[in-house]
Each structure stands twice: as structure tokens, then as C-alpha cells.
Image (tube, rainbow, N blue to C red):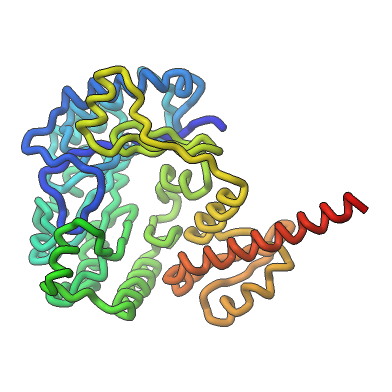
Length: 390
């Protein structure tokens, strides 16, 4: 399967956010030269794979890629172009913190080919931003959006977090309204989860915070759907909303099972059959590359059952949905009656899509449907085998 998508993990952050359990490296000063040199080494090892590819999307995630500054981003994208062809209409995204955006950096990003920026806004509420240990304030979000547009980058996405603890008294509706006032092309809305080994987890263990209820989570999720769709956005994936035609092409490739390459510490890659992932620690990634060692930490070969289950999960999390057999219609009838799903006529078979209410039950519904499909497949295989031996 040809690789047309590349993910680059940039692990650096000025500080760790209170909710974050990602693979990051907190640095007061970002080791730009060291990182870029190591990245070139890893790309050298992928030359055979990338030589045969024309990249349609490149995504720099983190961490905080904007910590590399203008010249660092230019170096990274220059190295990528030296190792692979990049389509003239490729989507090239970088994640950025609002306080890293300035005219000079944007000029470098644009010249290097960046045409989409995902800003980690998270909230417009000052107490909430401080509680999350963010490095920016609310005013810097709007300033960053205007700076990007003035510099020629119009495709701007905002990340926001909902389901914050009650004691913050943050208005979710106000956050959505302030985001829409900036006219972004895309919004990613994530519910807060308490991950182990994070400051939030420690606060929760001490009883210092009280998480919102499931009902409050559902209320804010459904409110976001209503507000965003009412503003003309397409709710194309459980956490993502886009103006028509501006869905994330890179993330959409993940959700359709496309092959992708990944470089940088903790980056994942998938060739259509095998999933690989790199060592998570930046120091270990550097050490291995310096010693000429592989940075791959592990790999998994997907079985046909794994692939089928993944196809169900990825399909259900998007508005695309999944094709189902006529024999599966009775299994999902209760979902339709509960308002969790709709079944539409497809080409050759019915098509199942989850509603926003169904997306709130995505994990359990996907497991249920995948297990039912596996049982049907095994039953059919058994019948075929019996017939062959008669």
C-alpha cells in the first residue's frame, strides 16, 4: 500500500498541561538543531519507502511543533521534501500554541509550505486556562488567528476542551461563541479525561476536584453539535467539525485505514498490515539514532479480525459510517429505535451511521457490532467448510 501521509512528532513543550499524558519533552530552550539533525537520520532510513511516494498530507503534531520556531519548521519540511515528493496541493499542517504565533514565524511557515495551522486554544476562560497550565491567555488566541490570516494562512483550526470540573464555572456556550467569532475553518472539541500520572489525576485522588457527571458531559457534547451545525459546520467525526470542504485530510486518512509513515519519538506508522511505533522518550530516540540503532519500539501485525474490528470502529466514529449486511439489520434495529443510529440505503448493502447521541456510546456500540460481525463470519466460514467436505 503506497504511503501518501506522513506524521512528524515534535515532542517539545514549554510546560506540561495539567491533563496531558502524551510523550513530550519539557524544555526551557528547544534543541532545534539536535532534533532536526536526528529527524534527517530517521528519514534517511525511510528513503526506500518514501522515494516511491508522493505525500498528500504532512502533519506536524506534538508536543508543540511551533516551539521549533520559523526556521525549525522550515528545516523539518525541507528535510521531508529532500526525501519524498510532496504533492503541489498537499495539506501541510502544524500544531501551534497561540503564544508562539508571530509575523516572522508565520512568514517562515508559509514559505516552507504550511497551509493549515491547528491552534491549541482549549478555552477562552482565563481561570480555566490557568488551571490547565496553558502558557497563553484568551486574548492571544484571537491575536494568533489574525496574525496567521494576515500572513497568508487562512485554514485555521481551533482545539477546545469541554466537560471541565464544575468548580471552574466555565461557560461552554461562551467558549463556543468566542471561537465562532474568530471564524475558524475547523474545530476539534475534546472531552476532558483524567489520565493516570497527570496533575489532574493527582488532584482527583486527593479530592481537590470533582469531575462533572456523565449527564453534564453528554449535555455539553450535544450542545456543541447543535451550535456548530447551526453555524454551518459539518460534524464529520465524533470530535471534529469543519466548514464544507475543509475537513482534516490527514486525520481523515487515518479514519479510512490509509497507510501512513511516522517519524519522531512515539510516532506511529501503518503500512496496511503492520502497525509500528517508535520509542517514546526523546532522549532514547536521540541515543538510538546517534548509535545507528532502530528507533522502532514495537510492531503489531493485524489479523483479519483486527482489521474488521478497526474498520467498524473507524467507520462508526465518522459520519461516513459502515456498510452492514442485510442479516445484521435486526442487530441494529434497537439502536435506530433508541436514536443512536440511522440506516440508509447504500450501493449493494445498507449503510449504518451513528447519530451524535450514538457517538456518546461509540466504544460499546463498535465492540458490539464488530463482535456480531465476527460471529456471523465464523458461522459462514463453518458452513462453507462443512459444505466443502460433503
